[in-house]
Image (cartoon, rainbow over the protein chains, first blue to last red):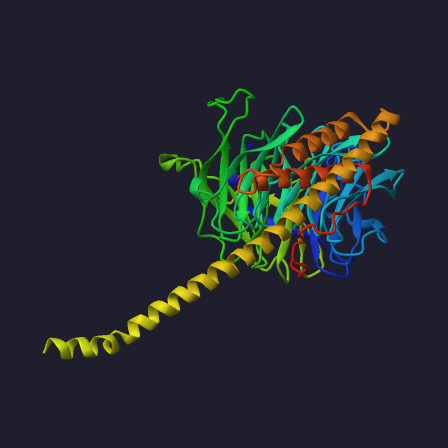
Length: 360
Length: 138
């Protein structure tokens, strides 16, 4: 079902206001967006709060794309500085929140109310990103102290530090677990992406994707995996997106770690820093950048002569009034995208196919 | 003619003679001062390393006592990390300051210490721990 081979248009469904400072990131609750559960996402901001937004169940399914969004909860009075990032556990019950105040808080959804059930302390200063692994047993955090921390969830919302990893030479911008494997990825101001895997509770850097391996030449801001987890996209201050592939054919190491290799570079489309990138389950890559625009890329099936390549599907100029810090595809059937910006707003978009039969 | 040359020789070489004299004197001074300074730096750095190692050793001894009193008090993982810290302190080449593993061992100790503290939820800090600059950024 390659709808995106035809023309597409991006429709703005709603602009959400509420945060009183720049919105740094947002994340969809992965357990929502089904017939019984309306879509939910969390957003976090320089105003030190997290807001939980929920889609109103629409009266008729035909007009569901026009259903409105409400702020269901505000998580406040816990962090004393900017909240930079958050992550839902796979079950959608817990929300981990990373703040510049050097702590990470864990919130539990108790019948619609959110309670702070745990606080993780350990980073020396600003925590920049947090991520749950696929099974919800491990949590990773990273920050300005150049370290990456791995925590294990214990019964009773206790968290035990499994490992403190030092390897990056600068500020670590983002951590993200592989969608199926317990392999952790981190990207940094030192221009590299590092891959961490464990060998009997002993976590080690197993690969560094840097400039010598066709990597980025400036800060790597974010990364995202495709649905199956055999490809990864990274975005950078060097104005490019890079696609990487897991080389599962060369299972050379004994522990079965498959190294990643550079597949192609999407260059020439961005002229300002790319802060966010997200790969949809359908294979559409969305990027959010400092030029206030959102761009969509898909694999170019015609250009296989020189290896895989990606083409621009659509560009939305002036999607926001200021830098776009985060773009995230929703779970569920609808092709919804949420974007968060320095302008303090969140926008909900729908990428719709133009199936008007106008002979495109 | 030869006598005239000899007569002027000492004055012609005056500059070089003084230069050599001055150099020898300066070299001697430098040698003495350098040794003195080196000794001071050595004392300072050695003291700092000893202080930090001692701090960790103290923590390890207290934690190990806790484990002896109540073996279930700390999780297996924390106990393992304390044991690893113990090994690292023992491994630190105190008498061999030029050993290349010095930094690696100290870094390993610091990381394990932070991990143990985070899990035990205690705020212990070695006062001399090198802090990163506190300027703001995003």
